[in-house]
Image (cartoon, rainbow over all chains, first blue to last red; front, side, top):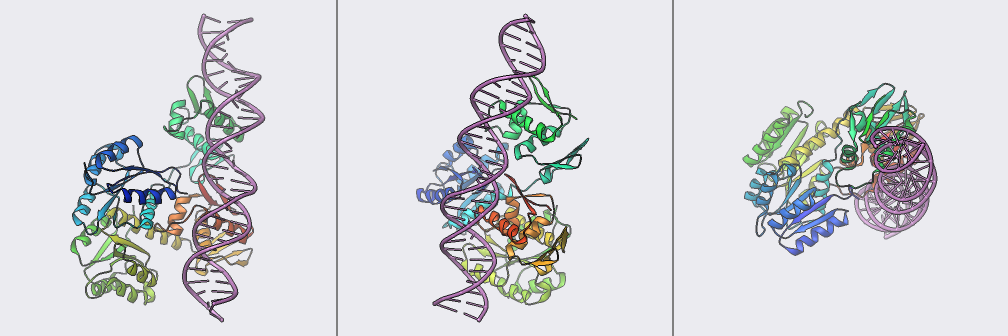
Length: 226
Length: 226
DNA sequence: ACCATTCATTACCAAATTGTTAACTCACCC
DNA sequence: GGGTGAGTTAACAATTTGGTAATGAATGGT
């Protein structure tokens, strides 16, 4: 369930709240990390780089708003989603939270259902498809919106990774992409895959397209070329 | 950004809330009208015919639910989108709101981000429906006014969700819709449904239509294709 | 010509993703 | 109440995919 492996960090000093939230989020397939005070929250955020952070306003060491303020000050956390846990009718926290870019609020006492649905809808929103433009070179047409490639008008079904790889290489025809660039872009920096993986995917693309539009540059990488 | 010139009416007795919401919506290109009680909301709604109305439940003169009830009683407001502002966990208001056809709820304290995104997604949704006045592709005819699909002239009865899903996918044939896009559009952001739900509905559509006009794009989503 | 690298190719396996069926819940209607 | 159908969920089957290992071919330097 849910876009697999999304990490959620929860910071609260009350153990039972931590447990309730963890349990419910894990039930829905999220990767949950917990912290019991502000300092720990900051450390774990740095370590794990969660996609979403739930911060209790009232915490020892550093309160939720301070944590949020510190995180938002760093560029890598600009896009991280942050939800505050507030006491009911705590207008002041509400206002301060907004200043530092909270994405949502949840009031205690917590309804697990509401909680999960807020987490889900926030994480889902980031997934809206960017309007990417289609590429057309020679007989080849790459349409990201359709996840489809046409060669001489005929559709050629490619698998997800194959399509992403071709689309990436074709985004700058003629330019050589290093193997490391390809790995970082298509596979992401966290995933570790063997060296032959790119080769195999390149081969599959060549095979399915029937033409050799991907040129090997030995010792360097690959480039797209008609 | 937003579909130009969409009018939003906001009714709330708290001046600062009115201001926060107005400001954020105007920032996103919406035309904002405000009202500070129920009676004023009704008057301004009649004058300006907004596309979307945000109603606080607790207001002087007439409360949000009464306003909604009156509006929904008049044919010209059947399609107007209505969002309620509720106190958190106010289940009763939720239930009553639903009875009178609320399109969404927002709990106080308000997160401007969430607010804007809900307004956007609601207005976007109707935009899709408006533009899809009867789609005709190959042997297939999709008529939203009748909630009915015809295959080779023969009517094929689809359930509500099935129809909405098919209509949504067919609104842009060939384009792949992410599972998250589908969930946001057909199910809305507040609902929690499992991962297999979309699949099952797709299956039912395929089964009832007898043709495979919905193509699976593994790891991405679904697309409509003859 | 020989060797060391690097890449191509193939076949295969494990994991991820989706298809399918049946059962369950919840309104609604008679 | 009992029956019906829509919507959802759960469990399992089927399929696709991504990744790897093994082997062979090409390349480039000496």
